[in-house]
Length: 293
Ligand SMILES: Cc1ncc(COP(=O)(O)O)c(C=O)c1O
Image 1 (cartoon, rainbow, N blue to C red):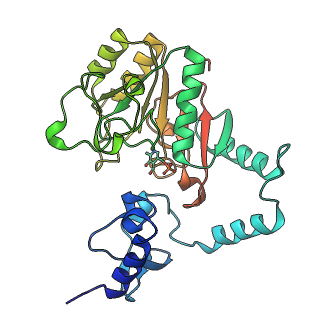
Image 2 (image 1 turned 90 degrees about the horizontal axis):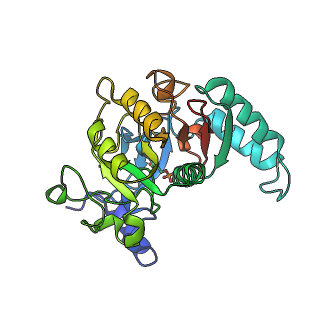
Image 3 (image 1 turned 180 degrees about the horizontal axis):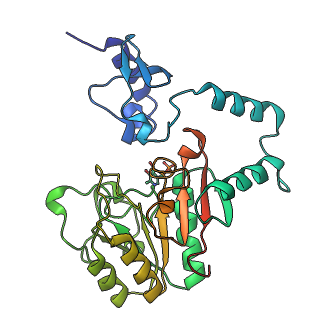
């Protein structure tokens, strides 16, 4: 018996025009259920079944789907403000930046972007500009966006993982295919909670930045061991790389000021994403005064 005939029909049609039938393959699911309505903590599929949304779009819907307060604010902004002036600042961006600086831990200034990937890209680019170095350290199993600096060795099959991945010896495959080999050599994938590997990479290469979620949430939840984040701070100071916390998932979830406000460690840069607007596409890169950026 077909349990989801309407969903299957929608997907069948979409597959004619979209690879896999879905705009992001991360959202491709089995069974092939298509959701057509959402409200608060619930989703409804095309057959009329109602579900509690435990997945919550990878985390940004703190207030639930379609929160009336947020929706009203978005509609008001669309109605009362131009979508793009093309020159000069806007009153709203200044108000939002002020609000962020008041509430988010150790923030001095804010740059807004559209997506988490753009924000991690800009954070790394800023780190390179600042240090004059090119190499980057990322976490095995982490996800910091789709671009070349962070998507190396992404979702690598278990049997192909090693304790430490040496660039050049390991052409990244799978979801990382398409990243130029020369670029792969700049990205060093290490294990979370492994300070020795950070030192190992820093001794061998001029590292501009280390980017990590302060709690690795992309592969379940891996908490930082006692002293790990402080150890990263110490190594950043010793080797002169920029410590970037990716708080796209942890930001606002653990504390209004972000996880950086409760873990006792001040990163140099922090990235936030769609949780900033209960799921609407916005992101920000913020500076913290841990070092002289
Ligand atoms: C920790 C983390 N960083 C970065 C990103 C990329 O954000 P975006 O999908 O807005 O580009 C994600 C996406 O889920 C994420 O979970």
